[in-house]
Length: 211
Image (cartoon, rainbow, N blue to C red):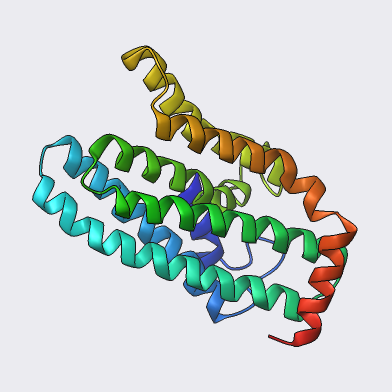
């Protein structure tokens, strides 16, 4: 679903009503697809016990993920530079919240790379943020152009590790508990915070800087 959602915007311009606005957005989407591919390879190598190769791919994954976060910031700044309407400001708030959560979980995954259980959980939590855009842009009617449904569908990632912990450990691992709780809390406040007068005023000020 995510590959189709992002991929069509690169390889089938015209399928959607609006085309990609610039090279930075194309680079941003290419990076998210590359990161997800590396993530899948890493997961497969880990499951097969090929830990040396898994760690080698991990270096690429961290580098690509860092570049994705950087490209996302450029996309965010470009959104606010081009438009100042409330809808664009709301989209920008949602995007920056995803960037910050992804960067947090990716950084913690890197710091916990020698702690397998925590590392895996941080990676899955990071995935839950990077896939939202792809889910929203997939051609499936239920989620197409519906951010609210896309983000709740992406919540299946943290819920999967919650279920795993409860069934296998009979308790929530600490990383699972606070990570899933943080994502849920952010998702509950994203929409109202993105519409708040404080953020809309801040977005207009950022736009006025011309960054």
